[in-house]
Figure 1: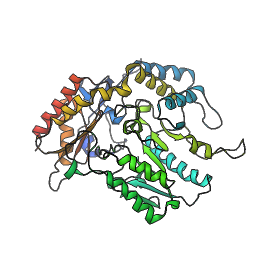
Figure 2: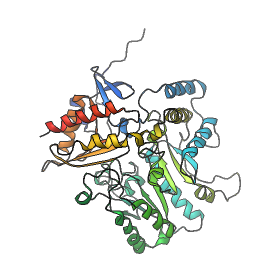
Figure 3: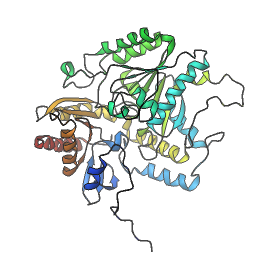
Figure 4: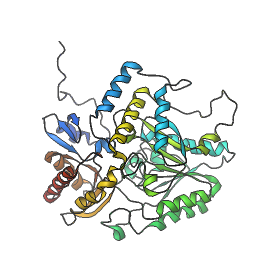
Length: 442
């Protein structure tokens, strides 16, 4: 008889944890050993409400029966199939299902394994697309300050978070950045899209004038910037970006790794904001975070630009060993079925007002200087401790865990993005406990 797996490992040294204060964690580990619905179970047997959908990804909640069953069945049937020059049915079926719910005009799916890889793939596609059309001078890429596009070299180059960039030397050349959209002096405590800031998109015209439109390949932005602190696009801002990029023949890429699959109350951020880009990068909610998978969604124009060469030749020299992996495809199909069965892609719209009221009830608590929300996303910004930025929010994270809720922090901002299955009673419990945490902060 096999010995049971220990609940907590007796040696934590080997695992170098990502985006983690490793020494602090290993001195007092926080271990999850099970999950179901809205809750994690810790190694000590405590229940912790998931206020972040894992890492913005477990949109349908944990341990969903259809997804668990699909993964088990697929492992027994076809565990792996090569994606180069071979295929398997579920990869094609899932692509069709994604396009069925994508904005009109988005027609093709290229699989990756993560949001970071989706961004890298989209940037490469943008460069190759212009070259395929005889516009090889279009090599510049435009990102945005405070943007997050994963952690590969392309992603951190077009991204705009300083700590993700400063340790890694030379990044991609030919990259410029739009200003971010956060205007706290004018837009503090706004519900939904702020009124001020659409003019910030006009800076793209300055960048075009500086570099020349015929040298710019693509602009990439998150419809709503999530990982940098939940920064909302001002009213009219995204439409301005769309108009300017079309005017100059520049591709517009939406990084929908967070905003995709119901987070805002619509299928995608493009639907929610009513602006359709040329490409969309997705991951996270595609498989409910259970099996790594991402994708780039493109228009027919981008796909077809590569299809003019002789048949039998490779059109795009790019891809991954696990592109369209059978296990991931099975998880993706079951995830989309779960969303459809329970109306989860639009559930955030039904809860938006209740969520906003609960979140904004925290206004006036100690150190709270701003609150922002859209769909089932929220941010509570705290006044930093002088000389110790991030310390107050990190203490809130630790205190919240002790009180039985999981939150996420970025800088001195608390970000919330619960699974889309959350009930009104659970919203009350989540925000109520967060209020207790805030009242106790020094």
